[in-house]
Image 1 (cartoon, helix red, strand yellow):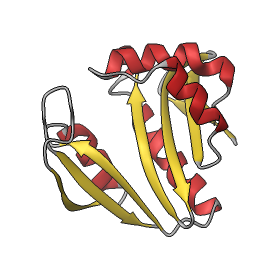
Image 2 (tube, helix red, strand yellow):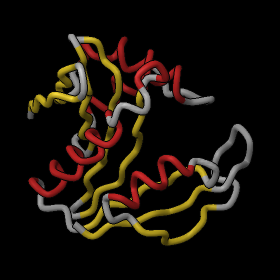
Image 3 (cartoon, one colour):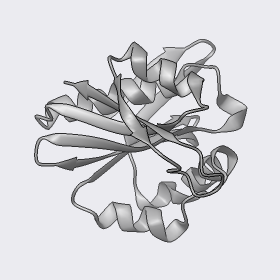
Image 4 (spheres, one colour):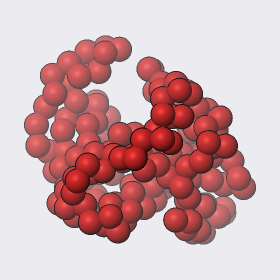
Length: 155
């Protein structure tokens, strides 16, 4: 899957993650999370038959990524991240849209995710795509014991 879209002054390309993308993904990861995933975690995802990851590129530079595990007919979004230097440019929006399309292509009937209770920007993005609040995972995040909101979407 490769899609290209003009966004403002630049062209963004969304494509399937490859091993060559991991260095760029780690840059995004380290700019986005207090407990970033490791190189080994992403290498493992490349061999995980359930895992599907897409990367966003501008001029071949990775500026964001999204991942989903598909188990039977259900998707679980594992990560959505945009490099701090490229936020507020609708890249996360495009990544979420593309991962939902990928789930539809794979006959997924519902998608779930966890999001920090303090991350209202991400929550609003997910709501835009039809995700609704389904519960709380108390003290889910190990770095600060923050709660996670569980959100679901029927596809």
